[in-house]
Image (cartoon, rainbow, N blue to C red; front, side, top):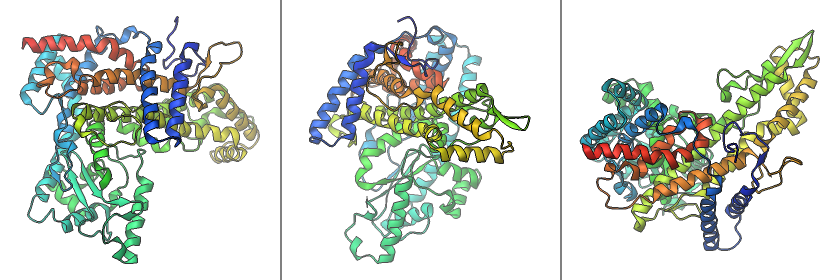
Length: 584
């Protein structure tokens, strides 16, 4: 192939190679299977396993070489890989076995870290970096300062949970009555009774566990409670359901928590204990507290505590999660910079008053729209990647502990990557990033509303409606591949040859490539590998952190090269580090 196909530069190209048709058809079939309820669950699971295996096998058709700037021999690789290794040495700080556990969870107690908390091991890895990559102390010290800045909130989180652990360790604090009191301290008044609330506290997160089933509690005395009690709990559970999505500003926590409801006295006590102010404590607590349904605790604890927590503590996925709720907001005059970055022209800047009339600057319009669309796609991809990496850590656990398979909503076994869930995540976000542009393209009322908003921003009436019509048509047709929600292979444009391309198809194919590499890394996970860190190239934890660190160097560009770097460049870098560790 003369030119790379899966790249940021080719994102809006109109065709894909004919040879990729079988993968698209397999993805479409897997999509149909995830939506269907035809057949038994066992039949759907078997179909999903076969499709996933076939997709991973066929991913070889998609392989492209790594561009020169990403090669292991380059200075940029050397720098960000050193950052990844140093972050790997901090992974054990991002979660823990339970400090408090009133529910008896098993999964957090034996999560298989490749590099446990070990100051001597961390020091040896640092010396290994110096020797393997010819850093001097000044250079490596500068990299370490950046890592400390990135992970600075870890100290505060661990201080807060240690304080909570000591508080809850006092006599009577973990009684059923006091657990209900603590729930009220975080969520405000509600008629929780003793036995309604359990707690799991790790070194960085607090999980309230309640026996929720619909908008009722699955407890023996539910029917005997007063109408007022049941109504108040039902209202709370309805709000919980409305908030319980991945689209949250509280990442890595999820779901309902109103900071204003947190007990000020508790916040003040925690602030005094950790030596900071109440606002900092409250802002930190809202990223640490979640509610889980009791019967689903094992399904989510590893995924959240070891899958997502490090993504905020060691990376910066929280920034995209903060934007995720806005992904399908209607387009307005000020849009463009929000997703496209501060240098992006606003949508309003494309409408120019000239001689008492509005004229459209189409070039500026398309610059604004392209940056906005690319930014929306980046946010959606980050969310799907975050979930895939959390699934990876969960699958690693079940590879090492196959006797303790974790419950899952996926059709795939808990020991593998869950391509069906990734496909669903991507498809959901495609619908959302498409909605603002699709609405303007098909709804005259939406175009009229945009014209009214532009008029309120100071533009004259003359020529405005016509310019809005022209702008909406231009944006839709120019970036049409970003709005195509079809997965199955279809012929490309007449005369162009190949298959029809879309952003959704490209993103899904890239996730298939990444899944193939992550599955390869899962093959390294096995019990009894101590000390695993002595062989970095066989450590799934380092593999996951490397994915995140390389991605965050340039999210829009590097997503399309993750598989290449993992396939060809990571192994020699890890081998260099292993040789240095062996010499130490």
